[in-house]
Image (cartoon, rainbow, N blue to C red; front, top):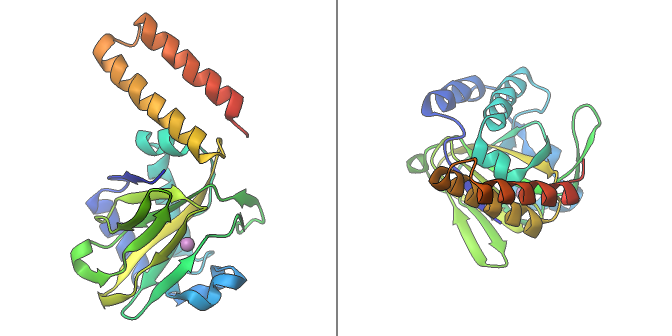
Length: 226
Ligand code: NI
């Protein structure tokens, strides 16, 4: 399931993070790629341990933890500390699938169930740079407003189209979900949305709403891995 998560960051918060990272010491992006993908990748990244990356990453994690749509869709068990990349003119990242396992700065391993890109540049400020994702429903080209995020299965083939004008700065990271299987996670998300809607229409105490909520939790209990 691919899902847009609007308004993860407000415009003011985007501006604050951009002021923090724009003048930081961007280095060759190949330091974080897997061996197989290094050749196809051309961009710059913020060093993982840098103070600016940590401060901006912490702000993003705090925003995600209070975003109901993200929490319902991703059912996060753990979120990899957000990284930051910058694609300038001529940069891009060819077709690849992200590594299955990532190790964070503290050596903890995380299974990448979901990949996320949080756009930090307005679409009018650059040409090219679309995130192109191939999934079972076809090919999707994604270019979102600054502050919006796309969530997609980390198992999907994807690429970043070459930039022909301006520069595209984004945050990217991975999520290990409580529910590893994409189809099960999508079903729980649909159910949760339906329960929210029914709760608004019928009232949270309505017997059908209570019963559906119970069914949701029993499915989650059956499928969750912590
Ligand atoms: Ni990737």
